[in-house]
Image (cartoon, rainbow, N blue to C red; front, side):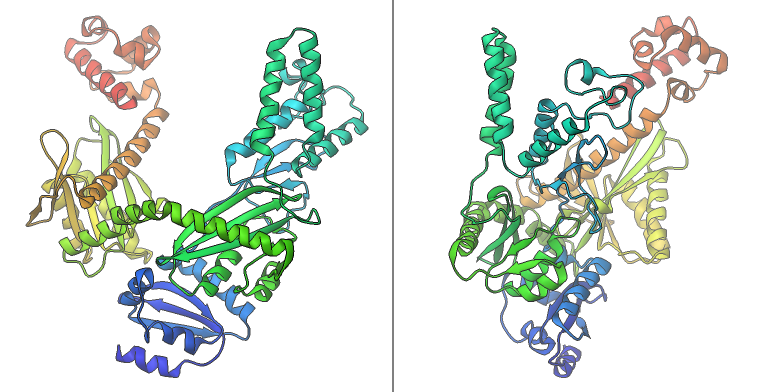
Length: 590
């Protein structure tokens, strides 16, 4: 703490970024400030609550970098967060990639769902975003149904089914009038910009024609399309005097959380909205500015962004290269108030669910830390093995950070030796994982959990110690009914209350690693043909294998015949082993 005090006294009154570190030297938070001295001192000279208090309790040191301007500090902050991925900044990031609908620039256009966008995207016919991917697909299906535009990715040699059912004009082999294509494009663009009148009128006319011809089933199908437009796609209109594409940000703060809402307004209609509730770690000014800057990574930036009055709109305008405005009066201020109100409602409606989820994750993680007498418990790595009679031997590792699964960190391991040796498998996967951690200087876990009893625990601990790593290893022990009933260390057993949040937390981690590993196991097995499956049975050579494949063709057919029938081709002992193996294989598949 004396070192921190000395550093605090040396901080300059300049813009820049600060990097908070824990006792292991890992960067746990990156922030920016107009005046570094004031901002960094505020962490240590006042009382904090919630996540900020948790952050401050873990700070053992800090660094800072000065820059010349606020825009430079924002850019530096975002780059440092991408480089170090600090655990407290992860909470503030928008991790979603939203789909957009693209009408391609090809001579005969197609409608596509696209996600990853670049700032140099040349096609202007991109519409969205659509946080609801089902709604985006529904729009594409509707337009493909109403307009005979191109459906195929590549041109075929002759007209396909779409041509024969009237949903394509046969562009691959027939000459089509360019004016007809341009007319369809114009109508589709108008629809995607919010003008549904052309399409709805077209549907109404077709309904009338089918009804007059007594084709009621076709009329009913179109009526459902019309209802879809009226109910799903006709969004709330807002009072604006123009048709400018704009996003509107609002927020609400209560009980240590900030609720952020974004309304996407296209053609004076709210086409979609996005909501996120976060623990408030920094001051709202910094959180909102950084959130909005990061929000547009891989997203289209509209012509105008409206923000509340305590956001650095000048810096954001320069960074995003668009108009970022703080409305002071009129319709645009009413939009901000509308979005703020929705943010308030979202936080009030979801607060109890958020707290309950926090109890089952973060608080359970804290309880586990105290139970095992650990200094910190930020990262847990959990392992499980799977095999089939010693074949298709694999392992899986899942990672929980602060009580929450971090799926990007999951890893799969194909074990080098196929044999029924759980302890040998555990030794191999633990060695491969933590040799790599040492070699590549990866983040080390605070706890390793193996899904198994004392044997697996000892095998993993032996390897960890041989690598000179000081990481606690625990096991999840099962009872006779294959249900988890205790947490074990090398020399102690903890019986956990089955109704407690801690038991739920351990069970959730166990289920996560088991499902991840089993899914990988199925993938590996599905790649093996019937021939490779038979290679696993001792006593079946090439000649017998050919006879079995010729007679039964599939694994399922072979598994369904009695041992006595298999004994006509292979010896009875081999037939019994084959029968058992195939049925076990199919059980695992299902």
